[in-house]
Image (cartoon, rainbow, N blue to C red; front, side, top):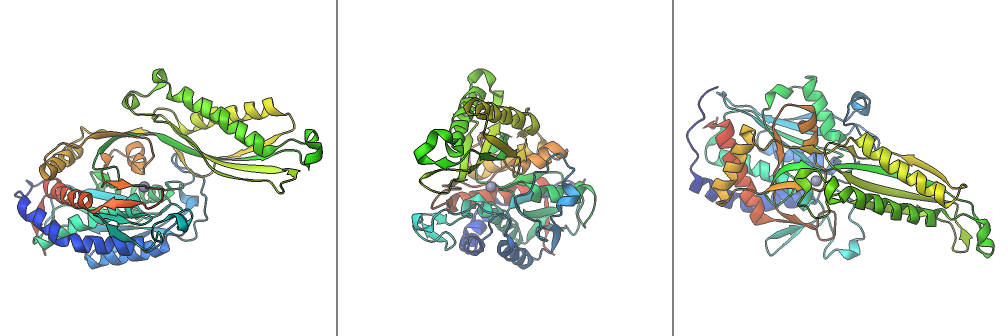
Length: 437
Ligand SMILES: [Zn+2]
């Protein structure tokens, strides 16, 4: 490996990022305006492909084919058909080379907006106020992907380019399953496309966790619980069995299990100081037919967290046993069918001592004047694929956002500038730079 190239002038880098700030806002606004619910990401894929092309980067399409990845350990049962959907993997290849490489991996899908009336402005009509860009996906995580593009563009505006391979992997289906990144890892491992796993010796996931460096994340699983009771006229309610009331009781017992798992003595050491690390969420409920009928059915959609070191199978088994025990206690006539669909995602730890991650922390310190804080994250990210399935050092590092998955989601533009500058500094330090073609 050649010696890394001379240091990039930091004053000039920061001035370049500042000059690119209006462009950064413009790209992110157009990206947010391209709706991309999990399962329907095409508008955002089209936009991102264009943004990569503008930077001279050609994208390879990695098609999500569940039949190729369903045997892999991190596969989650899909919530949507594959429908020919694809990730975009673009690579910058150095002219002279000899530098080390990095892959930026981010998801383009977003979660549902909820009622538009709750938003100050429509969720796919981005607006800027007080330095925050609002809109669904602005923070989670189109902003982070745009930071990576601006970082790369900044080096180019300075007449430089990375002296190692830099990959940009924009994936689908992170919010439901993580199968998008799994498809890319599978393709890279099996050299199914132009890019190979050995092309990359560091991975950064620019999820919006406020410029922290992630050192661990919880596991996350979803379950769908279909409860069938015994319908009856409410005048003779005692003859019926109410599955909606059973669902409420099941959730109450799951909250007791959540408290057990969060107990101080049962905590994973990296989560000891985290307030309530494991969250059990009743995210959806459907059921019933008529106000004056004891209902027939109820469906719950739940999400639960668990600590790294526990497998998704073990966690799901314990939750399933608790659900069945509650149903049996309530009424022998209740039928409960439980399906694991969506996230089946174990937790993981990140080795922040690995050379590229130490260098990322140093780059952050060069730009901001302070070391980044480590984060034990109470959500899942696609970092787990690389942490659990490859030897490539990986962490999560991205801008400050607020109200992600909520109303009036927004990302801080100042934070995006700092993250873009840190990423450019990191590419210069880790990959080295060479004169632009
Ligand atoms: Zn995200």
